[in-house]
Length: 310
Image (cartoon, rainbow, N blue to C red; front, side):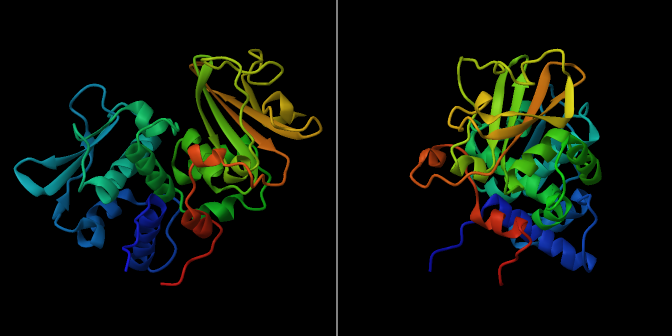
């Protein structure tokens, strides 16, 4: 019999299931990472480990997060985080490192699990595979699919809603937006701009299957003309502006519309653009999605509130 592949969503789901059993029902919206840290060594994911030490600020510069093994005791592990980071970022970092513990500790990369800011938070398609997997694990652990779905499904989506949910789950606004892209059945694209240039683009499954992608005109890519992202006089657009989808996506028909949202961070060097496109039929002949964004059918299954039989 072929061994079951442990994907990040499956691992996070199992931990949430164990937590619910321990707590006797539903968990609070804010996932208790301290309880998970203490619990993991006693689960199948902690085989051969006696303790994960309490997370601590990294004593070296440039570290966003790290998972380390005690050189004097192979059964003891520790987690470090950036001590100057905000609370919600520390939480994501700790969840990210717990993801490395569960998914990757038997095959550590050269140099160990020492994660910088871009690898932990960007969500970029170009990041190393294990960093992406740790991000997906953290996202599913901090925002369980069934709970997140209840908050999103049937709701009018705008940045007011997403910002409020970020506070409820105690995660960063960007992490919440990325989770929305992973979960939603809508055609949606999240674009992050760093100092005026494209940092990353994250697409929902429906966007990928309909070949909705941000049009490339430059390298590095700047915000496209006639979009809210390109309008420097608009710092925030949380209610959304409707415009032609073709302004953003070359494959879209002229009559298709999208709603564009914009959030500019206080430092004004980082901007998020959220695009919600009108529905369209999938393009089954297109296989370009196989080389881009990846989706886990199991994650799609449980985020819709459905649980597999065990």
